[in-house]
Image (tube, rainbow, N blue to C red):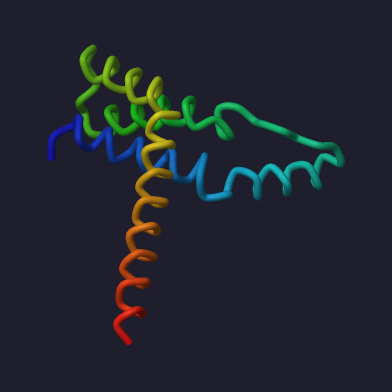
Length: 110
């Protein structure tokens, strides 16, 4: 598989886990309890942009594909992590809307 496609997939997974899944709020809650004070963020682990950058670089290093163009692609994916987050939300909401409309059509036929 092309390294750039792999980096895009890494970015999608990271953005989902860090920004959309609720996992970040869960472990920050655990950390807040352990430290007996509110922890709002713990960069880079609570930041989708930071984690996209570091995970893409780590992935490229593991695959032996680290080069200047790959670093630039990693930077671009990190820069667009908020955009990627919104695209994922749009896809989810759009899919749900389509399912609701299909459900309405099918239930009207009865």
